[in-house]
Length: 292
Image 1: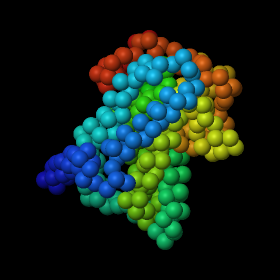
Image 2: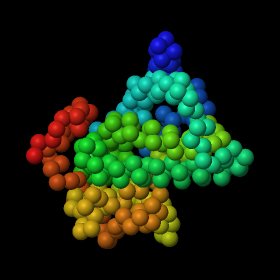
Image 3: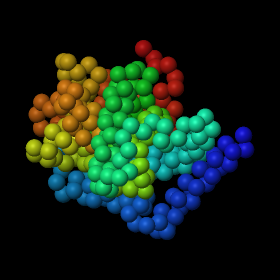
Image 4: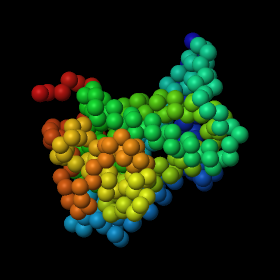
């Protein structure tokens, strides 16, 4: 039992120290997730201001500050709280004989670093795409995911407005995705981390981008806007365009839908007016049986 307690304390305090060192620039710039997030956010926001898709939308759009707070809550505050729990689970799995090699399907230790990163990125993105589909198809999960879909005006920071329970669901599944890749070095993951943030920010931004022929591979703002559409088209009962960083999964599994690229559609979902508007109300949303 003492091992579990030590794991929790070390995980909690270790994340606190890492976050503080990031803030005061005591970690290498390429692994500084705190200032890296801020830099990417400012760059995409400036591009939104210079090249707005929906020109009538305010620079400080609806819920801009709420979404900005969500960025830091989901990436740092919640990470500090939950990391101790993850460390405890790590000790538990080790005690029952489950290690990082247990589920290895493909050993990529001897592949070049860039190939490892590409495979890691693709596998992780597919796991997230599949998880995203589950969030839409199962009512108990959809209640949590409603927080993200309560966005009424799209902007870069909307990328990070999501219920903390999504982190609880995504993290173990992403870990399993990593475990199938034997030999992958975790310290290389910062490249994928920053690439995913940049793509996610652009997907939610007020910028009209499709990437031309690459739209069949990379998710983009035009495609993702329709994922947030209030009115779902026939044949897409649960939603469409589930892609996180890559769009290829939607084209492969026929969940793609881009009727036009005007950009002026209603966002949200039927009944979104009943969802709490503030952070604290959204924090506990999903744990009570929804009213009919």
